[in-house]
Figure 1 (cartoon, helix red, strand yellow):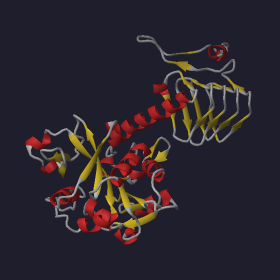
Figure 2: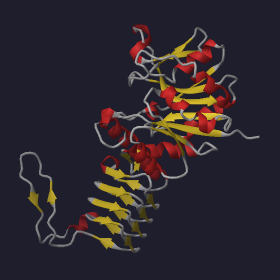
Figure 3: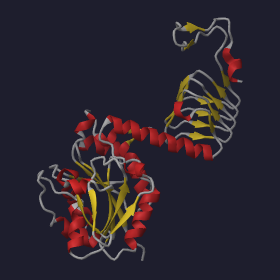
Figure 4: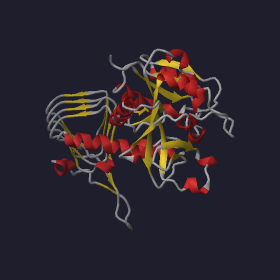
Length: 358
């Protein structure tokens, strides 16, 4: 019989470092709220509907996620172990494996989750976790290993000794638990000096009981980026944009300058289309094959037929027939950035700029 695998997404935190009235997991990233990227990734590899643990901004989060998930409510913010306990009434006896991830980690891929699940499926012990090797600690806990290399525990950065702070293997806060073990283990988690119950402590509990803990080391440490600040959000946006553009390049699309192109995750582009600099592609935009889009073009929820040529236009919710050209006409003034020491100047009203983009 196949295993029942249920994802649990911890999304009850306040996210005060974002300095926003919007719950952290709802900030937009590549056209979707952060938590939607997490949901898409876990749904690709699990068998049961996700459970989302909500707390701060619960109504907003519930509304933004919509149907297809189950919600558990954490009334008090008492730490990650306490948050996972909120899912017990929904899952006790209802699943075989529990995949746990926080709702602010949108760069984790289905491939990583699949590898973690496979690791735990072959593990004699009750849990497997994801780690990364990095010179930048990101404030993550340190992985403690015994003389033979086995995982013995996790120490949070705030409680770590100078020797432990020098450890470069970090906890990514992604776990796969055997469901018949985790609920009792959570009840054994001690209260931390900060007055919270840390999910990381279940690793030490397993090791103390002589049970085997497996670790999956990330090939790409960027996957472990958690979004706690606006700077983290911008960093994740750059990584996501690079992924999206690279994927479309592999499908036969040309990006003249990827660094100046903004593209969201649900955009579709046909083969042999060329995307020129300073172009923004948003929402459910669909672009046919053999098109030339940009520069200075913004499309949101636009359907573009094949063999179209769009320059210097901003379109929203329109359908563009195949073979259409929208180019800067004669008499249109465009301001171009001046070289250092010069004043900005407009193009002549008698110039037709369309030839520059043929």
